Image 1 (spheres, rainbow, N blue to C red):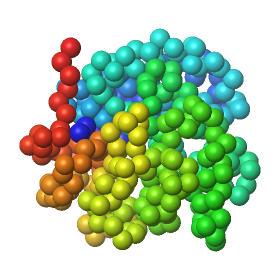
Image 2: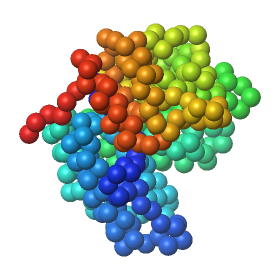
Image 3: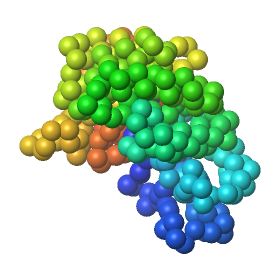
Length: 301
């Protein structure tokens, strides 16, 4: 079991998602920004390794506008050394990374232009992880997408478009249940049709359930992962007390996290904490998980 958090570290004062306005795009601006983003990503990963946080979600903005037509730079080659260095650090310390494109990536859209832009964005994410020379345990997670008044047809479109994706994307793509439209049961149906692994989101399941309890849901989703996909990934959070439905908590609910670990044993999983205070809650979760025999300590080098 590895524990991590998404995209932003609030402790070190360094962002791996710096960007700039599209109107000010230039090759020089891109190079300057990406080099700084890679430097900061390295700092974040070193912080995480020292803190026993061996799972991290890399932000989509590492290479700004990479899937936009304005970007004609061969960024994979230009920053090859930086990407290789990041990937080497991840492998040497037995860490794991993932990515999660923004909500505008919708492969089941009715509009072919939206589908085309979504596929271009997925190609970028896959190319970035490939540039780090990471195996297919480094995953890209997406939601099913829109309903468009007909969820059955929408799921069929997802399956059709999924079958047309590049192999470089297919080896990394996983689908997760969401908080309002597609339940775990829906995602499991899509898995039956396509073979795509299902990433279980605990919080989304609590607000958009489909019958199974959390422990059963972990088991059902975990069974969709093949050995080459690695340990199943799970997103974990709890609701914001007194907040609107679907809003994530600001900090870790320690008692709930302890119950979650106890209730899902002995199933192994890598846990992404989608909690607003990022590494602060992840560090608290590590303190709790150290008592769990599934928890992974950093590999010594």
